[in-house]
Image 1: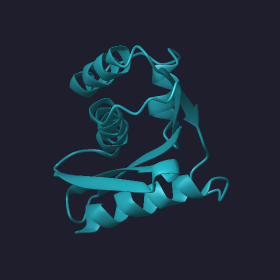
Image 2 (image 1 turned 90 degrees about the vertical axis):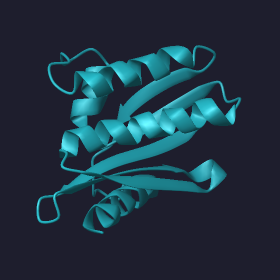
Image 3 (image 1 turned 90 degrees about the horizontal axis):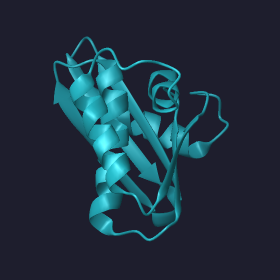
Image 4 (image 1 turned 120 degrees about the vertical axis):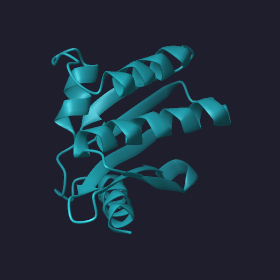
Length: 132
């Protein structure tokens, strides 16, 4: 199952937005957080997606989280150290480990490239909600 996640931050509104999109299920979910950062919203999008998977009992064996955040993808691959946002990293790791029956892969996708429509949809949702 492919899941596209994204995060955004509007300095003008001091509001962050996160989103995830699951094309196979036609599910689009987004939310916002006041006084945050873009990186926190990138992590939150992935966390909310895994929380949804955990609560919905989806039986797929493999879940691919697509993100345009190298910060998220490369840290989950062990290429970067977790130095900041430790609360969110811990939550993300706990969720990933808790979904032990599912293989979860984090993959990078270049943002705004038109390569995957799912990434564009998650990006639009995260940016729109951060402006409200």
